[in-house]
Image (cartoon, rainbow, N blue to C red; front, side):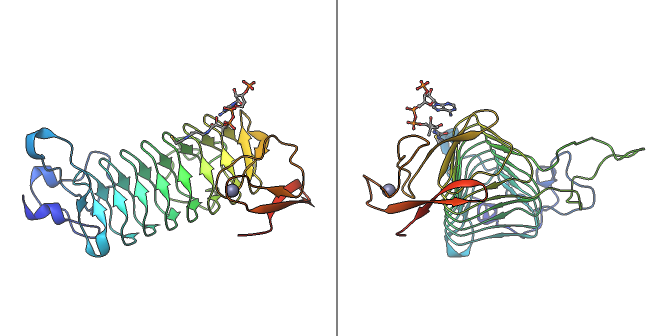
Length: 256
Ligand SMILES: CC(C)(COP(=O)(O)OP(=O)(O)OC[C@H]1O[C@@H](n2cnc3c(N)ncnc32)[C@H](O)[C@@H]1OP(=O)(O)O)[C@@H](O)C(=O)NCCC(=O)NCCS
Ligand SMILES: [Zn+2]
């Protein structure tokens, strides 16, 4: 095993051909590349212990300078994290996922494979992002800046911000529109197209996503959109009341 296996965020790529930034890397920017290292018998390796505090980064992951990664976080194969960005502690970043500049990810977040997280996205603690989820940050995008020139990939004042609040779940293959807030402990059904904010504890499904029910912190559904108050979770015993806010009914926890 070469010493490269221990590479981690912030280390500069070296000079051999295999250490060059991949095609399409921004010109003049140094990138940290954790080199691919064949594992015994060609079997895929898990994330290698890479950094202090138990951070594990797979040898094929690309972690750019300016990325901060919290203790005990694991980053799987083929992941690309652009810098600056921030990933909390005890997270899992699934294989082939992409995390853009300026993204903030809290503690205990689980991101499945093939997830695209663009600039302007904040993901709070304890969130689950299902496989193949795509975030967006521009409502009327063009490749070019009118009248000419390629539009920048870096954040601009027009980059729209999206936040996924604590404990929420985004189901597989969901598309998350720009400038939305997915409330705490909400759940987005697989394949949903989210175009508007999602209320706390709401289950939102379909295209466009609409409230189809309500869920406990523990993930147990309350059985349909017309939940009665007070609601008691059959699984964990948490109690909820229904309050009426400017955007309609909200399930509000009485216990945490
Ligand atoms: C939305 C979801 C939570 C509903 O689960 P559920 O409460 O057990 O509901 P059911 O499966 O009984 O389905 C209830 C109804 O909603 C429909 N439905 C289920 N999931 C749906 C979805 N994602 N979008 C639209 N409709 C959906 C069902 O077809 C059913 O309709 P019907 O009664 O007319 O047949 C679940 O289907 C889902 O999408 N979970 C996320 C799974 C995921 O992405 N995991 C990622 C990690 S692997
Ligand atoms: Zn519960």
